[in-house]
Amino acid sequence: MNFFKFGRFSSFQIKLPLTPRWHEIKVKIFFLTFLFVISCSHTVSSQYVNNADTIHHIDVISDILLYKSSVKKNSENRMVRLKEYLHPLITDFKYATYNNFTHRILYTHPEAYLRLPVAMALQKVQKELKAKGLALKIFDAYRPYSVTKEMWKVVPDQRYAANPAKGSGHNRGEAVDLTLVKVSSGEELPMPTGFDDFTEKAHHSYRDLPEDVLQNRALLKTTMEKYGFRALSTEWWQQ
Image (spheres, rainbow, N blue to C red):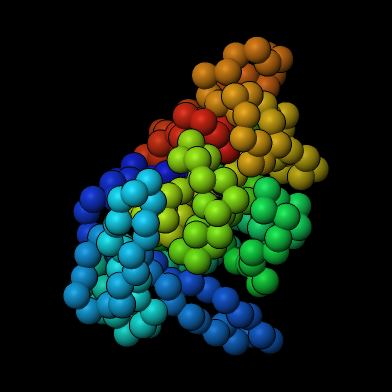
């Protein structure tokens, strides 16, 4: 459920740009509803999340004008469609099906978005992989904060789920869940586990695996890290 996290945006303590929530696509018109998570602001609505007897203050806004203002001040805050940066864009949105750990449909019209610098870094990863006959398959990218709260209800374990008290890299458009596939066939390379497997076998430190699986996991991790991403130690599909 977590991600490869882009290093330069990894801290939750700084003021991170606002992150949009994308909901409906009808015909060719893209209807936008925005949901953002930032560290602090006095211009947005407030939510208090009580976790582990500690009350955390999270500011959530749903105003497209504030998002546009943020982008105007810093173009790196811009959210972009991954399909404009990854060719081919291969997706498998598990959270748009019942085949996920919540057993609920969390997305109705999924589309992959990330912050501009993160998308550009992922584009470099894809380019290097294509030279090997491989490509990325995206399970999840930008994630609405409301979905993060629902996930926490099911798995309140920070090894595998983001605590809503802090928000996640996905909420900020800086994180992506993915794997490797063969370009020729679309077949996934063997990895230690399936997506969102919350066991020790999914950890990067787990070594009791076939050699080809170890090599595939290492290839994904090292290639992502080469372009600024960081691995989450408990989930091979995210960094």
